[in-house]
Image (cartoon, rainbow, N blue to C red):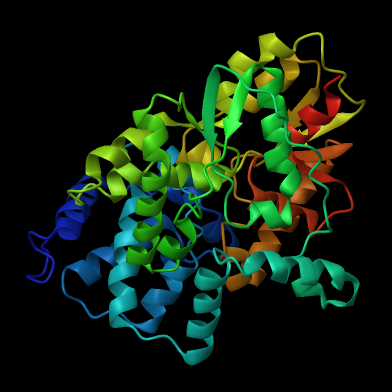
Length: 407
């Protein structure tokens, strides 16, 4: 695709990157077949190809409008289109550039600004934990839409105390310790059973995805730099064999620190190294399985597995969870239809675009229910919380199920 960038963007880092991405696009339209919003709405501008043209027009000097912003807002950033694209178009990076430009040029109404500010400042805040605790205490009194964002209180169990020569850093996350504390504790226990010590540096916080994808990209980068600073002493001392992510949304972001901080002279090399060390928890299963064989008693029934978009499309990791748990004796299945499609959670998307998010959730649960599962498992807190809001079937992180089966 030929481009003619306006002087505002020509020879700038964002313009050069966007131009390189646009040149790969051949306008074939394969991406529309796997775009959840295009399938639901049937509008070309609510699919990757249409959004690419909107971004192209803005970068070439056309003034964006609220309509432009709306179509970019409706994108889940699930990156399914990247898995489908035969030309390797990095759509996710292009839409980040486009959104940032449009955000600068198109003011939002006060209600939208307030909601987005509350999300980007509130979710990573230390105040989130007491707010969640209060919400859980009065959960039964909350209105439906708010109640579904407040999971029932969960006990975390004990954190292992044994020390091991093998050490891996683990990101606790911004909302996971309050919403689903057992996920981190279960991760530590499973790693401990495999002879690996999980180390959680207290100074590490939100991965930066929340602010970055709510168009506070500099705020997101500041959080990324803080995490690099928190992890770097362990890396220098050789005490970080890997940086483990049990939330695939965080994982896909940390894997891209090297790219997102590439123009920061003080952090570029460190960030690239952090990205190299980052591993999704499922990538450790080949190491964990041999250590756990004979020690796991899988529960009866089928586990229906929903692979998050941030895992299968963002990180391009597929099959690891199913293969690993199957080797340990679990009966685990993915949906027979549309296992590649987003569940509608997509970070803060389910709050900002609830109608589309709920349609995608119910569509996903319909496919998963055909497996008649005893439980649904996934690998990202957003997906787990969102899916649980629409079904009485227990929805858990797969590592919680593995941890519970350990004898």
